[in-house]
Image (cartoon, rainbow, N blue to C red; front, side, top):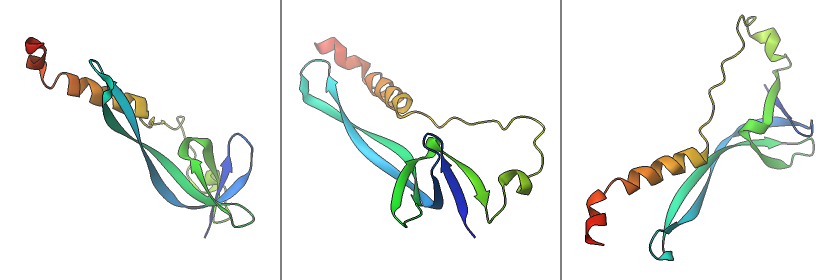
Length: 116
């Protein structure tokens, strides 16, 4: 019962183990005092835990791999024939989330501009 993944850029194959989320924090400078009052903005990206032929566990970006085999069968053999191309739901970029959060935080207290 294995799911085989193929890395799109180098063609290496891996065994799927699970999914994880990587978190980072980036600092955004404030408008007035720059880095002195920098705001930490969390960023998340989805990663796949997989292992190579040596058993070494690696973390792969979810957008860099495709499934080539499930339990010894190709996905096309398991799934019914697709009539329309598979709709892809884009994973939101961390930049879009950051920009949305940043805009919402800026508009949160518009009256603060009056005292400056």
